[in-house]
Length: 257
Length: 257
Image 1 (cartoon, rainbow over the protein chains, first blue to last red):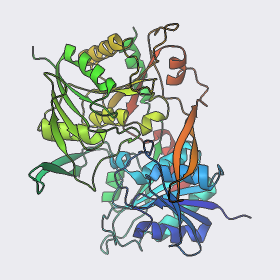
Image 2 (cartoon, rainbow over the protein chains, first blue to last red):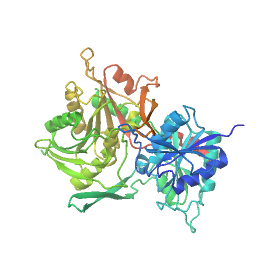
Image 3 (cartoon, rainbow over the protein chains, first blue to last red):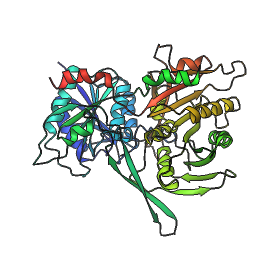
Image 4 (cartoon, helix red, strand yellow):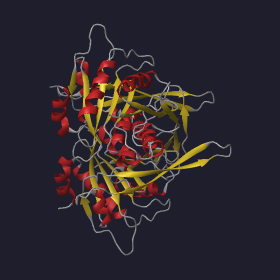
């Protein structure tokens, strides 16, 4: 049987520790193609490059692996991989990450990692975004490699529901609290509390740094935040259908009748 | 009674014809605050600026209107408006657009216009993204002004369902086919077919332009695409809950048992 073709993308850039870890696992399971940003693209969400041109150049940083670095966003990488590098051929699986930092709860919307996976789902390709709740560029990832492999094997074997990408978040490494297992969850409905720090540049002009804090306001027990807080891996199935189907009848009353 | 406070944002930039039209309508209904990108930000989706600093400077281009131009994305504009300009105070309504070009079907994911509206919904503010199916920078908008006003009035009066932003798309101006009315719709589940045009720069290095075509593969009658094709305004309620709740039980079977 032919080996599955696995496309690896990310948003931290082609040289990051996270994508290197993901490539190592993917090589154990199939033929690997890497198309990843040439610089960090965190927080790019579902952005695409339409007002500027794009670069796509071959890279030899991963021995024995066909790899390209791209000047665009994570979603651009998926589009270029499918429509240019693979000439329209579908990979059997797209994996994105491993992101340095959580993409649980509302962060799924800002995440380039997850947007790349969702773009693959739009193309009808089974897709998984992997994120680790540790922002350090050299984050310990040894504790999650076997789970990454197990989740990828599961999806290669059983597929995913149509139109779905999986948002997988791993607890950070902890000697005291090893990972207990996997929970299928819903996205916690909460938000970041932003703070804008005002500074002056050397010319006296003001500028801002955005930072913020996430606090979970969702009291449900079935959320990704609760799973992670209890040392479980969270898996949230994500859809690219943004329609709030349940509110269509109310809007018909409000707008039409 | 105090006038409602209406925050106006967009993704085509603070000088665009679309935001100027939207400001004109908003001024008839309330006090207006404008925070918009200082340059075009089309296709930025839900991107935020986290690796770089941000500029936010006052602008006097709209007489009698408090306005700021921002170096960041449409979502950055909403965050800066809420947490810096308004010091956390909630506007009564956020309107985004009027976008020069359609944001129906899957384009809702790539759209900075809609992401700004969705960011407002995350903050618990009633929000509407307006888009016109005409990409021209000087698109005719006279035929939609009364509908923009009517939809804004309706939302100011009745609110929107919790966690929802409205994605409103208008047919382009047509003398033969005037707008017939409003349809509440679901997002057509379809995708763009991308084409990457390869070129050589003056140094012989290749680069790419992304372009593409949208074709509606969704055969349902209740989609935004069908409404627009039949000369109706489409309104899709959009949720920031990406969870595919209906597939949680299948994933529990596939992953846990």
